[in-house]
Image 1 (tube, rainbow, N blue to C red):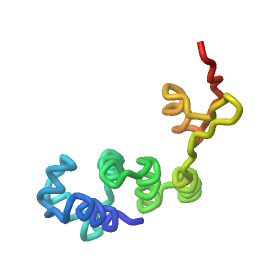
Image 2 (image 1 turned 60 degrees about the horizontal axis):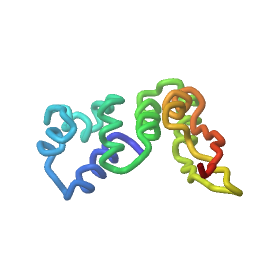
Image 3 (image 1 turned 90 degrees about the horizontal axis):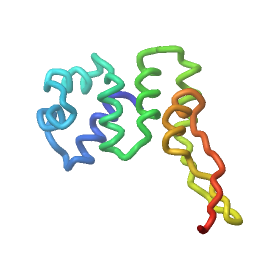
Length: 124
């Protein structure tokens, strides 16, 4: 998706609010929203992460889309966007769960995309 599409979706998700109200919600100026809506600017990564939160999307997906829109290393960001679009659900098999490690997932996701580890589910 492009910036203007994300902005429109965020406004709709928040009940069809005005540009001014969205600007306050995203902690940016109304002029910034106007630039984004009219295609004269691309969201910063911080704003992209806030929009992702509103839309209940993976922030990395929205940030990757913004980097693609900027023309930043297209192939790298296409790969990242594809990885971020895949939703991995935790699965439990025979007492072993495959889930992201909270402390490690944040760091590893920045470098390697979705990462899972094996955690033994033992009753103590």
